[in-house]
Image (cartoon, rainbow, N blue to C red; front, side):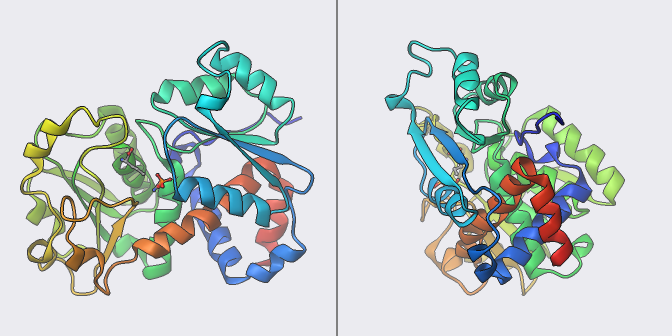
Length: 318
Ligand code: CP
Ligand code: NVA
């Protein structure tokens, strides 16, 4: 049997795989009726473990698994033995005997690595403190839906150097986009992730650029992206907010972007903090398309990892 593959960070896929996985998601979205007959996860249960709250990830996985003919099983950390009387590795080995794949939302990225190491079935990172690859897959899909030639696209991140930026940067670099990220001094993204993104950008013709000036990032940008300044698990770090005084995405800032720019946010948004109502509710905003695309992109990711033959067959038909 081929060794199983996991998705812990978006660069676990090659750039070619990422592009095809996204195209598959776009094709699936356009042909929803197909899922009455195409059921690659039939007879399988996919488990999802949550250590943190979730609306989009949980619902999009549950509904997506159901569309693919599988059974979703959501496991809240408080209800299972994990981390109390059982190690992550033992949990992984046990769950592998029942499930077709495991998704895991955790605090420390090393925990999802441990789960993947102990599991004989694919593990999908449903958000850790370091990576959010499912978000990036949906984000790349949303950008591809909006722009024919992504090599001409400039993506501007304004905000914290966090998990969502990490995978956005890796995905954008893999697909050859120009990525400017504006973060306050002291809130830069993880250095190893930036280096990986730079290598991908070198190969794809993309660009990765750090600035501390939101206007420089946003100037003529086609995509403006922000996220909360305080992520889950950082609730005790309220002081952090002071550093983000000039990093709100508001009407004044977006005036520097290309006229047809799109506004993106992984959600949930803290309106009035990182973004104003005027921007997130404007006709440039695609935040609810992004949320929907979580489901289609994850359906592609799950089929690719769990049933690659079915994934390929679907690809050939579309
Ligand atoms: N964007 C995202 O992951 O949302 P949830 O926290 O609601 O899953
Ligand atoms: N950066 C945020 C993303 C939430 C989807 C967090 O980790 O809380």
